[in-house]
Length: 407
Image (cartoon, rainbow, N blue to C red; front, side):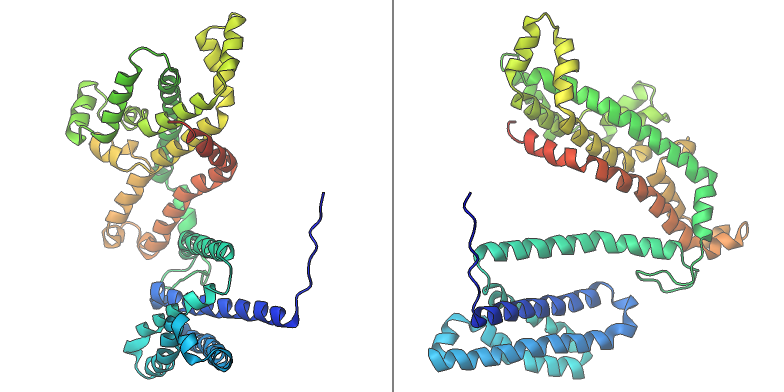
């Protein structure tokens, strides 16, 4: 195997590599400062001065580099040649000092500092196309991770902090009273058990129904296949609405029962199409060989097809677990008098709808820790899905990729 020969970089190339890394760091750092101040301004008042200084440092570094680059380029090619290809950077270079001065003196003009984004084409243009794409993808991934992770840290911090604190990402005066109350609340634990049963029964039932519907539809010579697919597609895009479902549940005598929150979600046409695509991607020779040995269709389905479909089964199961666990509307529609059947989302919503003053006479401590208890309920409702996801991630990644081959 041929090995790559690394050509040593010249001093000028090393300087360019270092310079573009510094500029990228300054650009992303200044955008992060603005982003943090935008989404979390109420909790970072004491850091605003430090943020402003940090932003000015980043901007000054980029300004100095831009000025030197203009002089170098103008000495070689002329100023008009520079202006021809870098109009956005020149506009940024002219307006940035003005914006920095005005934003420092007039707080109302702080929003103008977002003009730093005009520097992005110049910074990203110093990388090749593939590298730019990788950088943008990595930045987007980091931003998305922060959007989802930071609120979780805030949730934990508020849940274990003493009441009356302005809490951001780190707890202040740690106090576990709210957490202890949540894990000892019998009503919350009952709703937790309801959610576990609803999720387990709904997920198992959904996987069975979806697999039994997808398997025959994956066969090319199934009678009335096009008619059945048309029926499923119509149902997928056009639903009957809430009123017919309530009437149906009432006629089936499922109102005010836990099964009313389980059975309607068993059939998912989207999941069925994913499973159907996976079955169609399996080699038909496997089933033909088994049938030549005398295996029945049900035996082939249970012993050969389903074991091979583990990635898709895990994918669909996880979709259904998340859907059933977070389902809030079913209990509102089908449960009217049996509040003891409420799952976790409905219990938390009822708790959040109460006023702390209404329970202050019965439990003054609960009124004091109201916000902490609320965040503790939310925290415990998130933990099960977070613990489950790492175990099924590899199946989800493989299942979606394979199920999308055919449809």
